Image 1 (cartoon, one colour):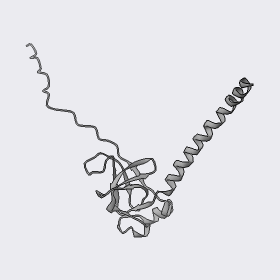
Image 2 (cartoon, rainbow, N blue to C red):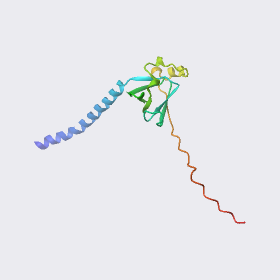
Image 3 (cartoon, rainbow, N blue to C red):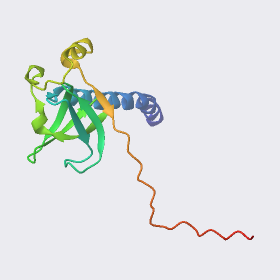
Image 4 (cartoon, rainbow, N blue to C red):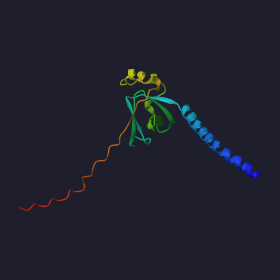
Length: 146
């Protein structure tokens, strides 16, 4: 009898794991859908890896782009998510409503053509390789025999 019960429990085990994974995925989607949206009120806005102006840039957002705000910090920075990028921007460049975007460099025809209030223009920032060091002198040339 114990063997049969154990057998049936083992048969049902594979069905419980996917259900738990589905519940976790639903929780992530529910959390993402409750995050507030804001709009970029600048011609472009740099997304950085850390909440400071000297940290590396990972992307640039076009004016009037919609982003999800994950956290608003007391130091004037917001953690945002735009498409596949998560990073930090200055909170003062975000507005609640796309109609509040006042920058004159936004191409509103393009915004309307590519999503209206769902418009997001993200450009990845390609890291610039550091310059080669010139502190090491070049090897001396040998004199050519005459």
